[in-house]
Image 1 (cartoon, rainbow, N blue to C red):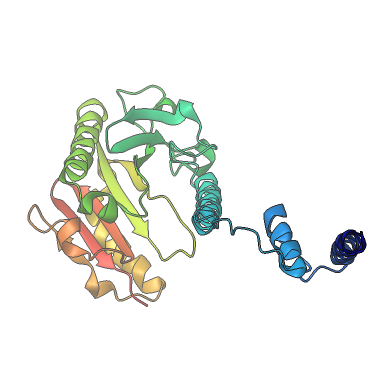
Image 2: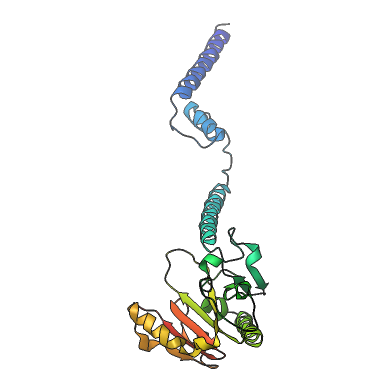
Length: 270
């Protein structure tokens, strides 16, 4: 009986000690923050000295955190790209693009009608005996890459089909305005260094024959000199010496094309 009483007393004391430790540990955790209930339970058993069978740690925990970090990074990049798209309102992918201004869409290049407030022909009254209302004829257009690109040099540099399609658009516009209205077409692209993304566009200007499109290089040299650039660096373009062969990738440049296989380009260096 004495032995049984001692055993019972010892068991009751052990239970009381365990309860006291549990109560104390509940209010005084070793860590101010635990990742899960499982980790808290492990700490309780460690304090009591009752080492339960260790559960395997979640091996995918690090992978989940990395996936979450990558998702946040992609979301941030998409947010920045969307902000850039909103600025590039002439691009089909922009939420600000007006569908009624789309004149033609190819696989690599799109033709867009410039808004009246930004059109160079809005205040120009061209005269032609075969045309009664020139205001309804697009005289200021944009050629825009369908894919994201900061310049036509980049858009066409890695895709021969994109370059061929650009040349086809230029040739078609020349034939259209020459046959119907006896007008010239000048193509121009200015690529500058931007801190943020900027979708490329090539300006298309329609001029009358008496405007002498072949004099465009002279006016361009004058404008370059006024901006502090070296006008003598304006290189002539031919059928063999094209934009792709004249400008290195990722360089700012000025490009003009005023006749078939006749144009000029200059790398804009400070």
